[in-house]
Image 1 (tube, rainbow, N blue to C red):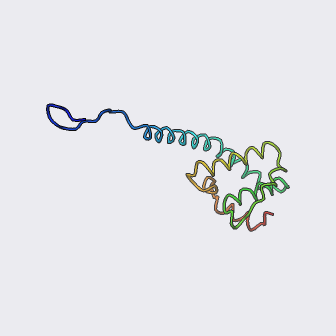
Image 2: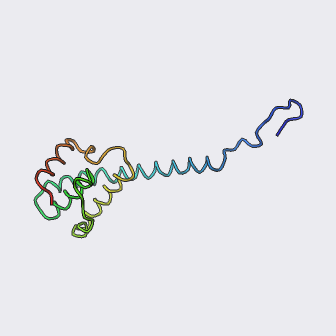
Image 3: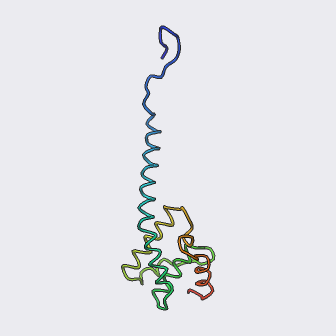
Length: 128
């Protein structure tokens, strides 16, 4: 609107447009989700990496799951296999999947010390 004295245009409102408020709200929600995924996912990944080093059916499933996150084209993973895991391991897999999907700060193997070597060793050992 024009002011009578100066003829300059001034904004009718100094409030941010609703779309901008929505954008900032969504960014804050994503940041909160990312923090929660990281807080739950990294400890779960460390536990799963320890399990993956073992020699059992569940360990093989965990290795295959982690390799699928590492490189899904090279190591396809049938999600039905997750049904064979006990609840704790299943929940850890879901936390790591959420970490990989929502945090996206790093690739899954990069959260582990020596992750590249570890994942490649699992691949060479033939996780089925």
